[in-house]
Figure (spheres, rainbow, N blue to C red):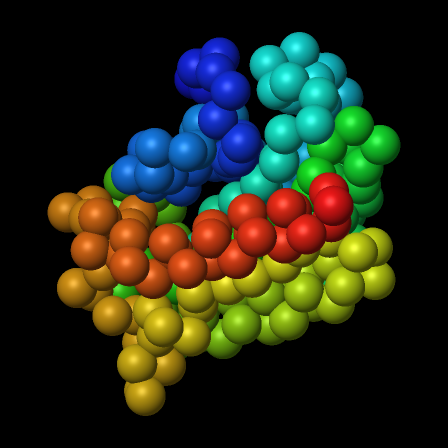
Length: 202
């Protein structure tokens, strides 16, 4: 678990390895918590305590989990509703001390199983199938966020082509994580988050 730097940056991004992408933004701290499932977060009270220890009270906590759930588990377990509810149950623990935000999971790797066989990035199903699952989970997470007054946004549709496949041009060499070519897609979301937080503080 790599720890975020201590600073006065207004957004603290907490996520799996996809949090590393947010190094591209000088107003974000990023904390790669490791290969955690959105589904499993609520079972990790030690992780919640660590977040409170690291992140100053009053900053924006931006959560970026869910891609691993979609890439590996949801095609088999088919429990999208439960994943979204458990994820927001974890996020809601911080509502009294932080501004809360969630960005939905990115589109899944363009590669199809079993062509990726690495232990680091296992996959189940085709790119099309996983993107359909990611769309479903995104919809459910959005609904949960709206119900709990948590900021939510997603760039998922900008990462998927008309055939339901991932646009590989936005991805790094590992074909799983976003490259800096996706910065122009995410920057408006972060600016909207900052503006929304400023408005709620006045």
